[in-house]
Amino acid sequence: MTSASAAALLSSMKSKIRLMRLAGLIALVFVTFTIVVGCSANRMVFQPWTNMEAGPAELKRPFEDIYFTAADGARLNGWFFPTNTNLVILLCHGNAGNLSHRLPLIDTLIKAGASVFAFDYRGYGRSAGKPTENGVCLDAEAAWQWLTNRGFAPGRIVALGESLGGGVVCELATRKPLRALILQSTFTSVPDVASEMMPWLPVRLLLTTRFNNQEKLKQIRIPVLILHGRKDTIIPFRHAERNYAALPTPLKYFAELQGDHNDAMVASADEYQKAVSGFLSTLGTANF
Image (tube, rainbow, N blue to C red):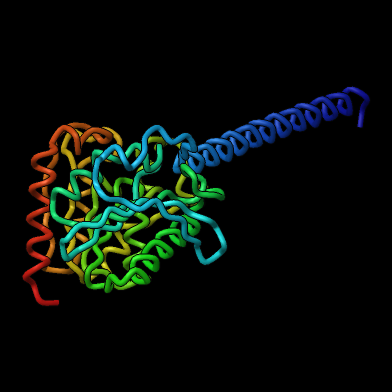
């Protein structure tokens, strides 16, 4: 081999090495970016607020401010509003804020004809710990247990999930007996929402938080009321339609709300209360 040929071969090899290094760098950047985005998406699922901006006394109704403990030891805070009605609603709220931001919703549910037990997941409000999918589901189980210890039979407990809380109550319904479910502005699954927001990234493979509600609803035989706004820009209306279609129970109901994702209950307070009240009345007369 001549010196010229050797030099050309060496130059070619160096070029290939540079290209391989560049390709490796691009791949590393892409993978790192994807992981960062995936981790950010997971963090976006839970946005706990610890600052309590209001208290239960503001509703001017009888209440109890209570603490209870999840199976793994997390100490949780909740508010119980007793009434003379036959049913109690176990309220599992959305991913942001805390109990203090749900007073209008609690008031509407009481007016609809039920006692209400609302609680903060771990890491929210005055509840200790850090929220995870399994953790908040344990929290809901503990809230259910508190109600049964209080004397409420499972057949008197209606679990209501607001947005992210819909994922919590769908899981609860697979673990504990309930009278019924109410799903407000709830998604089919977290990966479905994330892939709609970021279709250019493989977020389905990266998300550790799943809440596969559509699949869980296929197992549910108790009555279900779905409330959703057609103008919801966070969780599109089609999620509610798919969840409704997944339900095998004939005792399923759908009510359309006004407004966007975060103001649907306020924007259609009368319709919301009427829908929930009608649903609870059905539960009071049906045999199951």
